[in-house]
Image (cartoon, chains in turn cyan, green):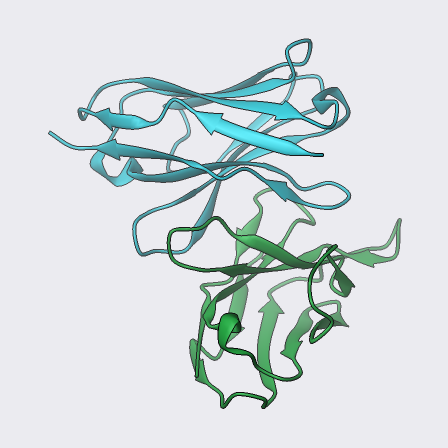
Length: 115
Length: 112
């Protein structure tokens, strides 16, 4: 069974940092691009970033460029999102997503940025 | 960036009646190399992650009731619920995955 499970969320101060993890089981991530999508409270879905299958190429939404870094550990079947210089507007649920073949989503992890 | 526009923003349908949600992309999401439209539909209920209903514009995900169907190609797509059930009350989103950045429609709130 395919499972993506995000972790690392919590309450953080503006200007702080956090690293989210996405542990994957049921398929080998080394064959796939992986994405992060977020959803602010009561709002719609917004793509955040993606990392290529071998980790050599990353893309980011303009709103997080220069502050967030996505990476992966293919041996550990895990994807990461390093979030620096956090802002209040980064608050939301962060989802790890595989879009190739049949799209698969994790349950998400809530990041709250507040003083 | 490809802009996804859903209509209507909200929709009220009686139980047993048909519900239709439209999604228009600003550019074609047809991948000519594989002749497939990179378009998905999701259902989201409060406090839950999005649930995949349809991918490649018209393929129903495993376990999704057959009252849900997707159609369209190029830039115009439709999600149809043939006979609305109470459990279908939710937000619905379209999403393209043809290129980066991935973008979503703004959502359609479906009510009874």
